[in-house]
Length: 293
Ligand code: SF4
Ligand code: SF4
Image (cartoon, helix red, strand yellow):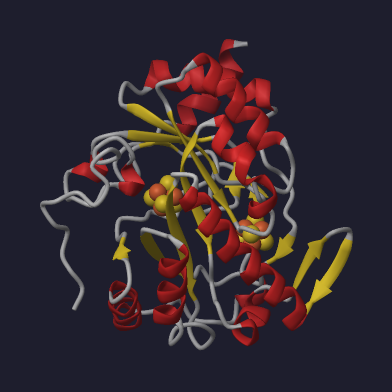
């Protein structure tokens, strides 16, 4: 059965400092994180993905606007003024942070000015093996890899095509490459001392009976935590239902056989600022900037 939030932190060094790697009830509501939307493009095509720039949607893949690495450091400075508990600077889109150099460039700038901030990276994992040393060298401490399947036949339905070494790969070939890179990347990151979490989008009729297999394989590769995220039905998966409570519970129970399960995810925007589900400074961060300048 699923374990309730325990009194013992899974990651003592991160507990209360990083909301998404805190496993006690109070730990995840103590510190804030800031997402910097510096990464525009993506190198894979997930069937559920719809990226957009607006102020309205509360979901991944959406930001107010794209920032350059220099603009991103201005945003960090403003966020530190607005939000006294800011402890984590993460990059999670709106595209893939390893599909361009902007994320690593931004981390280098942030690291130089604010060495006390925890750096957090989120990626689909395709380019992770190629950038492991750069990621570790710039000081990224926490890594999230989105792994939606470890069976190529299932993965091919979720991400039908990828861009790999200047070529387009389709179907099973694309799925095999993506899964291999994700598992190799997780292993390399764990070996370099990063704390690795896996996000898995729960997709009814596609991977809902497969979550235990995903958890088993990413755990074997070195992931420490799994976050099973309910599908937001849109784009090519707009016709699917959102997973119901029974399915979500079963999937998390299956995952919990292999890994600690993170259950507080708020499916945040790529420019989120504050404590997930508690405080939100994004409007102020981007809003009064227009007035002030
Ligand atoms: Fe969208 Fe992320 Fe998939 Fe890229 S990896 S297509 S940004 S969901
Ligand atoms: Fe944390 Fe989930 Fe928000 Fe990512 S989307 S910052 S894991 S709460």
